[in-house]
Image 1: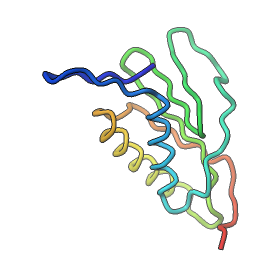
Image 2: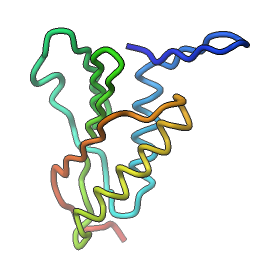
Image 3: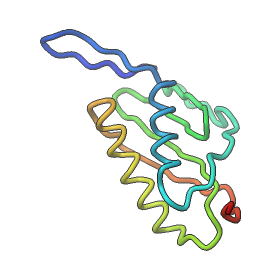
Length: 118
């Protein structure tokens, strides 16, 4: 379930663990995200689809189609639709930089709301 990039200089393999770390860091950098929420593993397994779950991130692959699900705790008072839009854009940019191509789907799941720490 790794991302493979090939060019004339050679081949680079990017593990899903590295990708989930980069996505989590990108999500936490967005103002209004308090924390990453827990993911309950692979809730539904679909034949032919590989799923990796860690740090509030689920990456599902089926052929060349990559779906990223991000589970966050939002700060109280934040506009959820605006937060989701910013998260999608930030994560898309990060994945594009790290892996060379953007995922086809980025789903944001707000699992709760928390007061900001002072």
